[in-house]
Length: 380
Image (cartoon, rainbow, N blue to C red):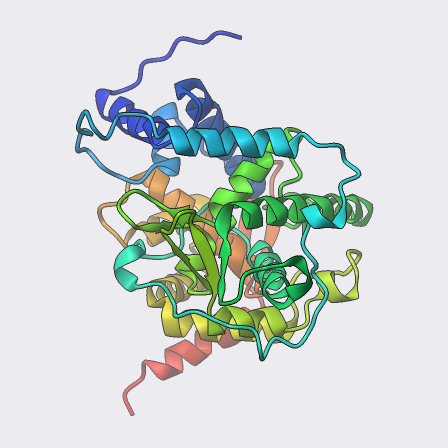
């Protein structure tokens, strides 16, 4: 279907930069990806608000009104060739060998080499981006990375670094394989949107697009300005360096998170939860130490729900106070990611209101989280 739309000049410039960077084959692919991301967001949160295309584009590209120079708008041939190579490789038959996936079995990781966390100057400020909407995909990748570093039988180079691109491919394939199995159990258990354990795993009908999105959101890469994208570096679980090719390494925190037992990875894909209590506690403590803006945002969400702003629209308005420069769509994307992660951490629950609406409430763990932070801010 051909649809004609009006796009502001400022968005056109940003689209051109994204395409020129080699992340998309052409503007049409960018627009399709923006629409797919927005549809995924709407389905996961069952929001009643309808977004314009402008707002959808804002939710997948960072704010920037500076037009790119002619040099910046030249296509990155190497990035384009890498994307084409990965798509060709991903088209292999379904019965792939173990070489194309990662081991997710739990081992001892005390002896694997680690790297320092990424420098703060290379990371976005503020809470995690809303599309990093689950924690289990992060767990899956750090476990797979720890095992890849541990597995010397595959001829991996000595030291703490692995080539990023082949690792990304294997991680995405692994996530799709286990995600498909988990999705089957989601259906059997009758889990609703926003409650499914396979959420955020690459289980979409288009494998390439689905795995592309997983790699971008939950693993990441180095951009041209040496800044990092992806949930893993923003949580300081990995660092990614601009070598030739780019390389990824596991931090001490990533190693510790990988070593914790996980219900889905260690007990079976029919588990009832995606994170163990130990993992939840570790994640909250870790975020409080290394990602203060994320922890503060979680506090604000818990406070808002406690005070009665427990619907998506009113909760978005409360989240918007964290950064006056956010547009409404940006604030909603941040709110959506926060509530999804807090749901997975067992801090909030969801209930249906009417046919499509949802409301949030604090769980017992969420009330404890809220009360502990309230007590910690009281004068001694």
